Length: 263
Ligand code: MG
Image (cartoon, rainbow, N blue to C red; front, side):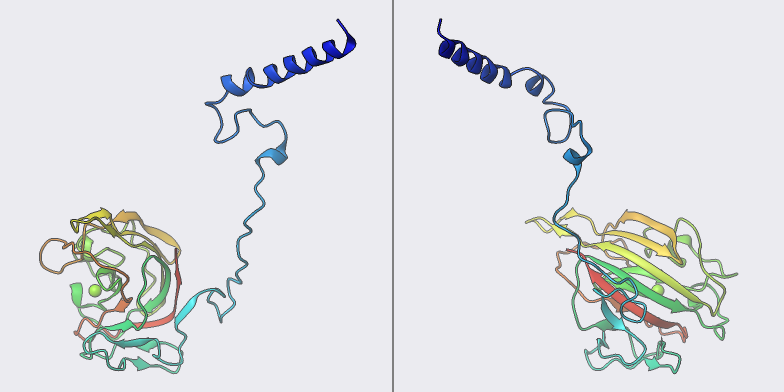
């Protein structure tokens, strides 16, 4: 056999060896690679690079957020009653207060899945009890209410207390600050999806941090948050974010509202 023949045989043996052995026997292990990586670089991902966001780039709101209320005006809001200009009161300290009886206000813009930041304050002048003590609410897609209420020394049904997903899910804990101090809600909301028959194929999912404390942990809503009756399901697309005028002189104020659409 010539030297050339030995070389060809050697190459054929090498090709055959590459098509079997560890690559096939270990194919069920690891997320993608058939062979367990042996160098750190093999499991590094470098692209795409996430966008850079200044977390406080807009007077405290992230640089990529849509600022819905910064204390200056209600330009981003309209009346939920008749779509005219929102009538709630702008205060010198950069907050706004429910103008009793003028109705809910809602964003001009519609949203689906979002990260939403809202700060709210109960009224020290409100000495009512139960559901009448500084009752308001933050609605996602115009339908699903995260309850705002002053529950300091004020018991009520727990699926209607502060931080509840109204009539569906009590908060994990009650994390309110004292009456008259500022609370924050940080809400992660994933919009529902519907099948061809109009049934929910994916429920609306809500996570809420109240003053940084987890109070709703990815709860799947059954439908709308009704005052009377069971949750209702009807197909819908993006909708406004709404703030509630409970029409009982709540005195609730809001400030620093911003949203980051998630898609
Ligand atoms: Mg309410």
